[in-house]
Image (tube, rainbow, N blue to C red; front, top):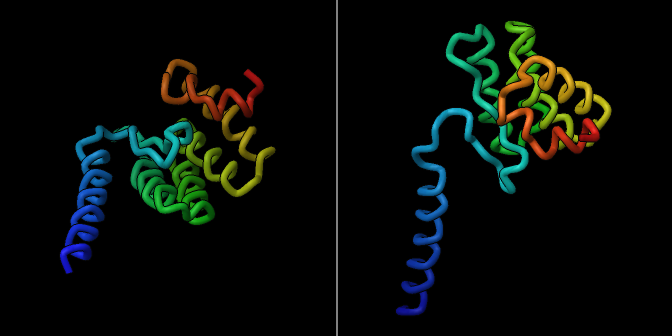
Length: 130
């Protein structure tokens, strides 16, 4: 009985640690495992914000196809929303649609050339041959 109690305590401690690592992060820093493929939140002023942010939630749950649909809706609402183009590219990459991902990464890069979360992204650089 004592061994079961110790094992449960260790499991709970691990879970609390994982939750604490994500708690309090500012918008735009939502990560998936690895950190190189971080989905970005949209600025509050964007008409595509709600759709993009819904997509981020699905992306974090590894629902790549559902997330991609939300990012496409966000782009329809705000064609200049670089974060949605970037997030769509991440989703497409996860689904193995690398040519489409490259096109979306290019669009994101063109729309936000000074955004460090986009321009310094290792996965974007890999797709764009930088």
